[in-house]
Length: 84
Image 1: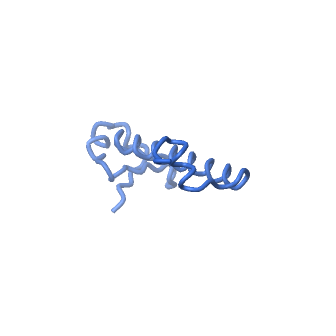
Image 2: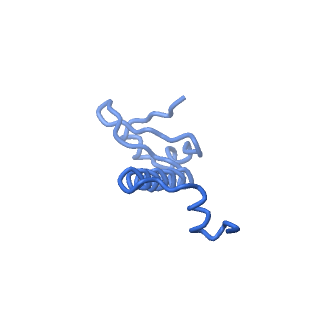
Image 3: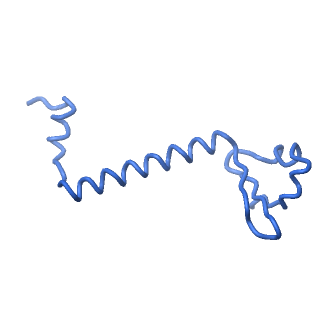
């Protein structure tokens, strides 16, 4: 169940911070609307890494669409993994 708090609860930030756990972000509202999310630093780093990976994969896909795909054998050869 989402942990939702009004932003005014940050006056006592230690209490709010105690409620943060990996996979359990605290959602802060302002004037009854979602405004901020507080997450564990490990969760933040994993999210950033996942976004970077998705961005890189998207760039690779766009490059392949523009310049053409290469075969698995070509990839292996370029990486020095092929026997021939």
